[in-house]
Each structure stands twice: as structure tokens, then as C-alpha cells.
Length: 221
Image (cartoon, rainbow, N blue to C red; front, top):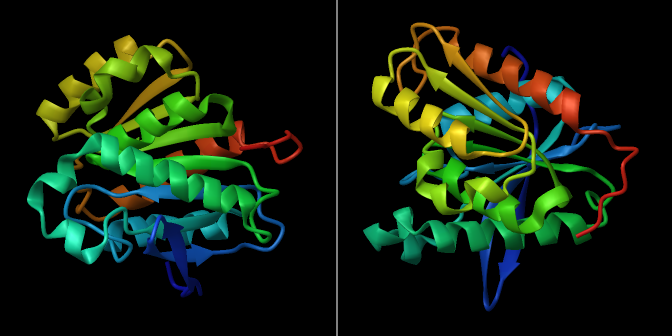
């Protein structure tokens, strides 16, 4: 990416506290993608921000936000508390759906690593309100108990060198009853650090979101 995409800081109210986020708003946006990051990551994730910038150029707004407060993140177990992370994602979704700048946009999820599990769990509860899901190097197996409830079109992207996660994603795919595809990026490791691999992730994601996000559809939460 040669062009720096501007975003603004937002605060998402969660009970008596708030979660910090970066909101990219694209003019005439096709939809908005909520990023659910992996354990130990945050709205500052270099890889997720890179993908969000490319999606912006492809016509999509996005929200990257901290699923945990700084104090909560100090408790290591919270980073793997899928129920808690899923609840936070749901509340952020409600905030996006009621925000005057974004409430008209169809919503999709992009989950990385353990964030894929929280995205799938949230989508299983919000159902048709979430139009598409993309998982990057995800652990959908951590949401195995709800996979048979997933009706949201789901794309699982896995690095070709990430053997263990490939196997876990194949198992998860067999349990998702709705539309689900799996794409393996040759030569990529779990974090997609190899040159060009994140660009492939972004391209696959944009294609998926273009296919399933239709802003003519009514979207209510």
C-alpha cells in the first residue's frame, strides 16, 4: 500500500467503560468490516491495519478495536475467553448499527487467529445481521459448539505452511452447515509474514465481501 488511509479514533461504550477503536469511513461505502483480532493483539495490529487499508481502497469501511481494556488484557486468561470476546464483538456491532455514520451499512466480520472464534460465535447469535465472515489463520475450532448454527457465508484463509491450523480449519469447515469455503495461501506461515501473502489475504477477503455484502439489503440489529 502506497497511500496512507486516514482513520479516526472512536470510543465504544461497554457498560461503565469503553473500548478504543480506529474507524475508517469510506465514502459511498459498500459495507463495514469489524475486525476481531487474535490474542495479545489490538487495534494497532500491523497486519489487520494493512488489510483494512486495502479493503478501504476496495470500497469498504472498517472498525478495528480493542476487545479488552488495558486492565483486562493484563489477565492472560481473558485473551482466550471466547465468550467474553464474542460479547464484546456483539456490543461493538450494536454500536456500529446505531451510529449515525454507519447504521445504514451492511456488516461483516474479519477474524484473525483466536479472533475468528469470537467472530463465529457472535455471528451464530446475530445470524442474518452479519452478512459475511473471513477468518485469517483462524482458530474456528475454538467455537466448535456453535459452528452448526452458522448461516453467515464464511471464508477460511489459512497459510500453506500452517499444517496444524489447516487441519483444524478443515475440521471446522465440516461442521459449518452454511456456505463455507477454505482457501490455502501457498508459502504462507501462520502470521502471513511472507512478502505478498497479506495482499492475497486482502484480495480474497475483498472478493468475499463483494460477493456477500449488498447494501440494498435491509440491515437491522
